[in-house]
Length: 239
Image (cartoon, one colour):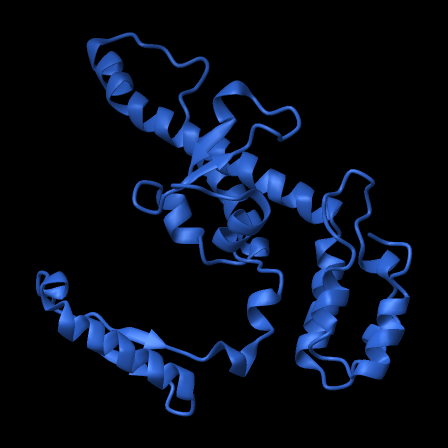
């Protein structure tokens, strides 16, 4: 099934083209039937051009945008003080319960859930003074040890990833940038945004790898040309 935005001529044309391809290459699409038929939904992004440009604050989106992920693998080798076994980690909703449950939550919620995960881990970990006095004690320890190891790896991985995300957010001043972005996106009156200088929304560290023209570029679509010249003029001296 193909559904498209009725008010959009490009979406309609694309839907017709896709339908023609499916009809022509029927064998390619003759796959196993499912209880819920697959549906292709076509939307015209021009109705809301700003949303894809805004900084994203869900766990999955932040990982993609700030760290990068390839085949469910994240390269953390450049993280300051990273241990050898965490230089590359795997994030997959299929085999990581914490990630599956939190991938669409916002960053504030992730911080709370990471804290809960660590507290749960501390309650379940074997006590340092645990005594294995009987065969039953030894058997119970061996049976629980793989689960403990898995949980330990999950905690270490997500604490490291969230910690690096937090560091980058602070280093690049993304909270301030996002505040200006939200104002540009949601307010018709951009006079307040015009008072924000590039210094206020640029990175707060000389080591930061972000472009202070980020907000200025995005403002082009929302601010009249005369005001845009004024705003861009404030960016002189920046890369």
